[in-house]
Structure formats: C-alpha cells, structure tokens
Image (cartoon, rainbow, N blue to C red; front, side, top):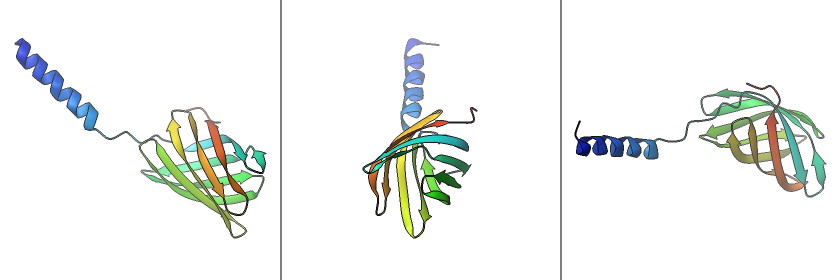
Length: 121
C-alpha cells in the first residue's frame, strides 16, 4: 500500500472517530450518592433501570422513597423524582462506575453530588 493511501485511510478513520457520538453509559444498577445541599447533606441510594436513553428507578434517602424518571444521552444524564408534591432534579456526567453533578430540590435548595456504583459491573 502506498504511503498516500495509508495516510488517506488513517485520516478517514480519524474523522469517523471524531464525529461518532459518545456511547451512552449503562447506569443500570444500584448507586450510592453523596449529596451536599445548601441546608446539609445526605447519602441516598438510587437504583436505575436503563432502556436505551430512558431511565427509571427508585430513590431512597433522607426525604423518603420515590420512583424516578430521566434520560441519558452519551455521558450526560438527568433524572427527577417527586415526594410530597416537591420535586428534585439531578443533572450530571457518568464516567464508568462514577458520576457527579448538580441537583435542585424544590423548597430545600440546590447542591452538588457524586456517586459510585454499589454493585460493581
């Protein structure tokens, strides 16, 4: 193969890598969160069920238990749940068995969070 053809093939492969969207992370399973809000912190447990880009699951923590819904696109996720008429929204980024981001709790305040997969995959 000539040097020009090899360079052309290498360039084409690099273009494919650069324009391919990020693969969605699989977040299905149990995650242990550490949340720091304006009013204090907690260590809730989230269980996620992922179906393509859709998330469902449960929250269990300081405020009780609730079902959650959300989305994941590439490494970006957003999910929410509602308890006693107040909602909480989490947004963040997944990196393998860890994730982190920000959250907003209606009537309580905003904060930051990080999480580790509790059931190693």
